[in-house]
Length: 387
Figure 1: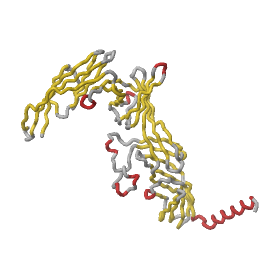
Figure 2 (figure 1 turned 180 degrees about the horizontal axis):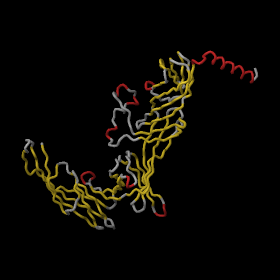
Figure 3 (figure 1 turned 120 degrees about the vertical axis):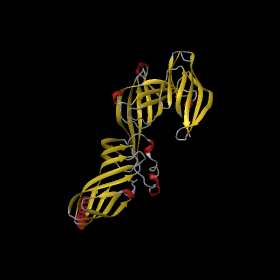
Figure 4 (figure 1 turned 30 degrees about the horizontal axis):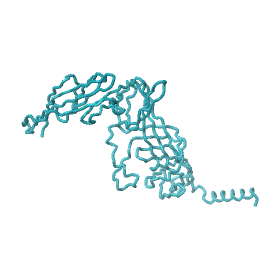
């Protein structure tokens, strides 16, 4: 049989099959319209397609779908149709037995959850020579291990975690859903990316936002209770709209660069940037300040007296004193912020030097240390607590 004859026989077979099944078989090559990736290696896939149905029983096929599909999450719907039975084939297609009330075309919508989709957020920071301004870029790294390609899809990246009612009823890849994202003070944040193409086995980076000329301040910080002798070098900025930001900043890895001499880029390091809500102060840790250190020495600690208040609660008054010594072995004068914490209600504070900023449960001193010298702070705090 010649090639032309073979093609004619093949065509007759295909036509015969179509006549045999008539309109009872509706094949829907799935068009993925929306892809949502959560922050726990889980994705929501939404697909639609127009299909032709006869009145009564039809077989509807949809695909391809993810090889990592969570089968019991599949939800299919079409107007005036009842989905009676669902099948999943190893070549990643879905099919249903559908009872249609009417004959004609209708829109098939298929939604399902899948693993194999992941994303994580990170930041790129560029600091100017004077340490006064920065450019901040937020990027998302996305990865596709589903076995299918997504073309011209509306992508949504979200920090939200789906609700898990009972962990034991879900497969293994749902095991972390019961760990709430409630440790975060930020609201759920979504980043929409229209017309996104995402191939299987592909990893991409997507720019989420870029802000320039954000004011920053270099701060030398001593917090002896938390960090021991270390004087920390940090960059502080305020997350305000007036300062070029004013948006929720989720936590992520930050890679810090600085414009150096001859406009060369210097890599300062990679750090973890904690989440920063609008109006909050963001703090970027750059490491220990060179040729600087501090000491925090307890001088005294005593419970001075106790009494009962009008509600019968025992009130205990405590008094303690600390000396803080800051050493500057550098060749330039350096201003250091010194933080002291109070875990009981502060009644009074006597200190030398006396200027300080008083918060609800902390005190901040600003100390200017000449080169090759040291400075001391000494204070006595009186606090009270009830039992």
